[in-house]
Length: 111
Length: 114
Image 1: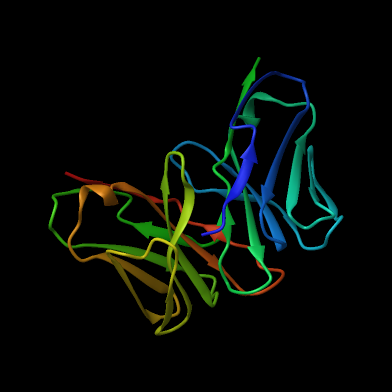
Image 2: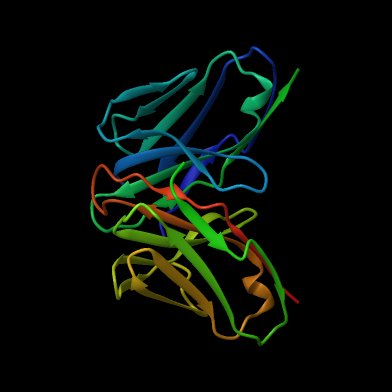
């Protein structure tokens, strides 16, 4: 299957700091999704992106669909303790109904 | 929250026994998916369905079968469970299969095969 490279794998930051993470693929995608997963729960959709260059915000979260259509970025501003969790990217190519997922970025926020 | 439930939420079974996991949705969405989640691998697609009785394989379908006899229910069966199938299984739903597709996940089933 297609591989999505998500980085960094883990982050330890101070409360109030900004966070950036990204996801790259070897193929062009038409859709990028970003999810957050808390321990013992299913992933929760944060942001959906459908056009190259698109920039979409959800509160303190902002995600961008890369111009090359092979990457996407997620930024979290002014982090708070409840931002702790694992963040996943997912991409869907032009054909087919399948999504491919990154391996996740584990975020720890130190109060 | 998307109306997705999974049952059971936890199960421990022995190698060689059959296991069926159930996903139930109240959203009347056409597409349903089964994923497994393992450390270092992220979420990997097992099977998906694009309508009643219409299913297709994902990237890790060996050892699994699915059935969808009603829009709201999607069953995942391990015919003869193996220890390599110990994992957390997630069901997901979406209204569309093409562009402008958003997937919503259930709470997961933790399966342990001894």
